[in-house]
Amino acid sequence: MNLPGEEFDRGIQKWGGFILSEHSEQIEHEEKHLNWKEAMSAKNIEMILSEALLHQQTVIIQQKLPVYNPDGFPEADLIGRIVGIQDGDIWLRSGEKNVKVFFDSIHHVACKEGESKWYT
Image (tube, rainbow, N blue to C red; front, side):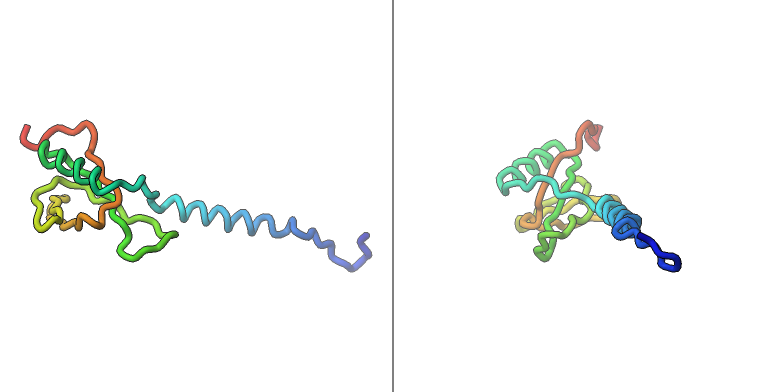
């Protein structure tokens, strides 16, 4: 019952817009980040990298985080062709530069689909 001069309090309803906007911001924030791909065993990673090197295919590598963080998002994938292997580490030609990738830091690797070889 409302008496004259008293404001009507809608209770939780007045917070609905606030909660919705916070939720929307959280969803947008999560969409900006990449998702983790399925973790691969060292044997599978080695097999895919060997195949990519043999056929000169472009590889897409998702690296582990440098410091373990269970809630962390992965960094952008490294994309390039394998140009060399030194002391068990991989050198990728990515764009205009060579990038060193530590084998132990690889979380997931895949070959780029439907690509022609660089020498054709």
